[in-house]
Amino acid sequence: MKQIGIGIVGGGYMGKAHSVAMSSVGAVFNTALRPRLEMICGSNPASSERYRTTFGFSRAAGNWQELVSDEKVEAIIIASPQTTHREIAEAAFALGKPVFCEKPLGASLQDAKAMTAAAEKHGCVNMVGFNYIRTPATQYARQLLRDGRIGDLTWFRGEHTEDFDADPDQAATWRSTGEANGTMGDLSPHMINGARALIGPIVSIMAELETVHAQRGGQSVTNDDQAQIMCRFESGVMGHLFFSRVATGRKMGYAFEVFGTKGGLRFDMEDQNALWLYTAEGPEAELGYRKILTGPAHPDYEPFCQGPGHGTGYQDQIIIEARDFLQAIETGQPVWPTFAEGLEVSRVVAAAHESNRTRSWQDVQNF
Image (cartoon, rainbow, N blue to C red; front, side, top):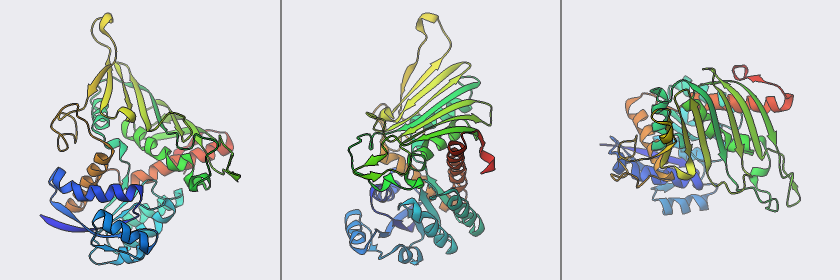
């Protein structure tokens, strides 16, 4: 087994998740490459040192430039705010280093295009962090759709809804300003990626964005609280997507529903170890959705647990991502989703903003 030095930029919510994942992935998946937690960088030297001690890194970096340029840091994970993604990725690629970047790929479509071009120019391994599509249940849903289990697809509904900003009396945060920090920039990329993974490319959309709470603690909210998209997929399937950070009662509402000519599928991340399947066969009196509990027979479940129905969790999704990133580095072969997928998601986001501005349908390929 060969070691690889990992550097992580960012030590908060996702920085911790990736640190834990890189500590665990070798034991879970018996990877040929074994991560060595080499260096971590927070927003300042004090936080960097705190993360180093807490997560078990060898060293703390004073800034991201120090981390990226360090010879012992052989692969970079970007878990910092999206406004920093482009500069860090471009610097890493210029040094020939693989990059895993948290979603969204950048703070704008221009960032996403530049980052994808840089990855291609330097020929570096690259991945973007769309973790929710990796649950065993969702991976199995993709298999069922590919196998035609519910027939020809006719309709898709997807949502990513949470309620962390549902209280109108809650004070403003960094999420309250800037297009990149609105719901279309923050939550929508996950379900846009999910819709593309399950159904295929989105070719045209009509979108509406809304600021529900225009003021927070005396500060104006300058971005969207929620948004909806009517869409048409390349296959001809009709769809609807909804995103919200003010969906009272929804904690992790990454959910989808698919209809086909021979059945249907339903999934909700708040019950992430279950997939609901309907097949239009058998006596009328026995027709209905049945609950499938994930177990060792489903993708990427058994390495975590040998007991059916015991379940996997959020952190396990990040460990699966870590496995995929290491595999891409080891083999030199891209593992989806690469930056190219992140760029396609950013095109849909850009088209949604333009659709909302012009009150018109938009072709995604024009962005």
